[in-house]
Image (tube, rainbow, N blue to C red; front, side, top):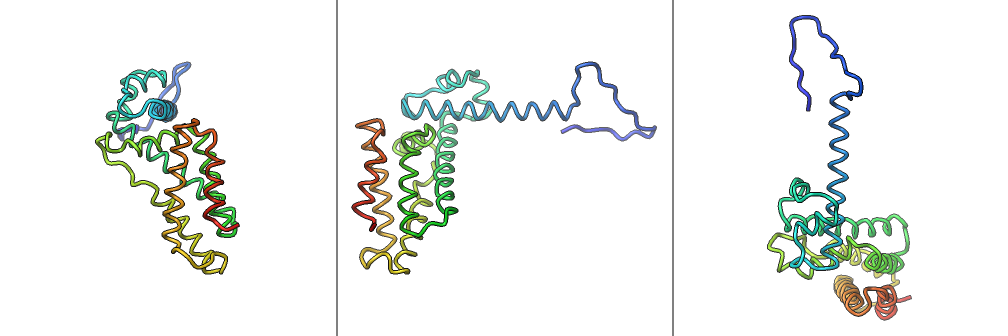
Length: 218
């Protein structure tokens, strides 16, 4: 931030040489570049973690993928563990955004359950950041840093919709909404993992549709 001394004499306006930008503009450009660089590094880390896994990736690998120096990576992230934490946080941000979109659609509760799982399946199939976050959750014991607790908000959203469906008489008596939500989350994330191992998630949407057909009333 600029600091200006207070003069007893009348203030003067500094003259700018040709091609010289005001300092506040220069600061803004530097901040924009820093934001872009951080995004490049985070995207590169996601690609590396998704394809190779946390243990095999180095900071140099991330720097090379991002097209920056190791110093640029360390400017934004203290170490590889910090990169993993940031990718995991972004993973949950994206998952939360899917849930928010479904919430804003104003669908009936069981349709919201279906829509959330289907949209999440597509995101797992197509989004590298989400693929990386899912893999990091599997490898969390290898990371040596505090990672977000897995899928809590996701389970809460499903529970809320299932409870609403039960209250409206759409969901017949059976397991509690909480238990059904936990089963759906376990089935979903197990299905995406199996789809990843067997088919690089190409069939994850089909597998999730099978879960919905079996567990969620039409």
